[in-house]
Image (cartoon, rainbow, N blue to C red; front, side):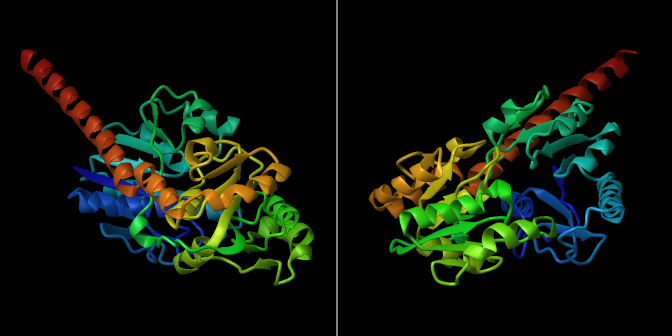
Length: 354
């Protein structure tokens, strides 16, 4: 069985800094390769995966400007990838919506992992491709969609990349895009109400520059509220691992929220607002607290010392390991392969009878 994993051409696999989807593809590709599966990854030339890598564009190109050229670059990359893998690939696994248009071509099995929040226009678009096996990344996300062929596979993490830090320091952390829906402003308010310093890390995309300048930067003093820029794996281990809690005070329905697992992998509890997948990931009272307001989050921080770092990591590893995720995708791929074999045998029997 040969699997083609198609990423976008804009961010390397794995990502050097920002890129949740690219981190997922990297973990899946490496895990499948370790299981002896023949994998080819279509990404950009800056990528480093254990399986075979093929690329059309050499370097990262992020953030994209949203103009027509970026869209054309994406289509060019995907069409090239589909054409290249067509002769010898059994299953084509897509990770961005434009690639779905190629699934109308008969003769292959198609898998698509939903990485985007629910949008009516996207949902209508998905309904035009009934032959695709869709994968939601949370049960909440699955319940918002209407496709007949859809199942949930939670993301998994390589826990070997994250260090358990049993001794915490008296500060809070925030890691994520500096965007209104991520609730960075809420994190600042929680820190102020609780009297606990906050360290913020994350990418400032051009579209949210004004948000950062007007609602975040005025509070940054380098002491009580710090902004440390983007975070690579080393910085994540230090920032998340040493903090007494990571804040996830979102203002949208989060499709998954990989950073919550990253925090838990270091033994750090998560203080999150309910929304989307949060209740599926954070076990209230065990790996953190699910709250409904800034006031509640500030109050629950008083209880965070009772949560044991080792217990947080153990729970996360049991439920969100890369091994579990890879096995679930393997089960899906094999199910699709067996379906193809049955269809081929049926067609062969009909031809023989004729």
